[in-house]
Image (cartoon, rainbow, N blue to C red; front, side):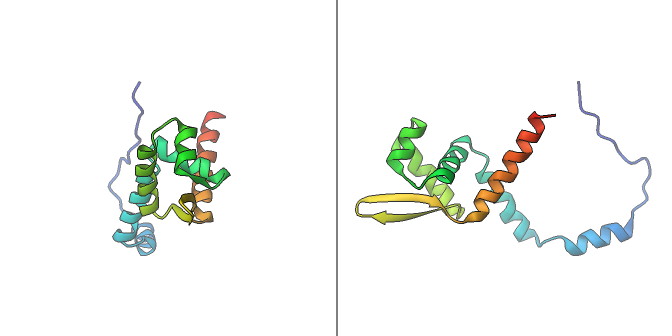
Length: 122
């Protein structure tokens, strides 16, 4: 069964509403960057890595073992997460530890998870 999309049956433009929203709309460049950020969350492996890093700072070896993947595959995903400024790293001798870049990542993740859990509980 197809979802029904309700459409207006008139062509009246609510100029006050449109103007108000237009004045508050961020610049296209910022919205583009936001869309790119959300694309990074569109990969299950990256979500699993972020979830693991909520719990504990981890090295590539540990994450690879946890997710039963190669270190190379994990390194690739960490590179994407680092470019999006979602994770950071620190070196301790030969070991590189990864952690979340800041508290915003936790908030973004938790908001998404709450939304999904709300959907399951309907």
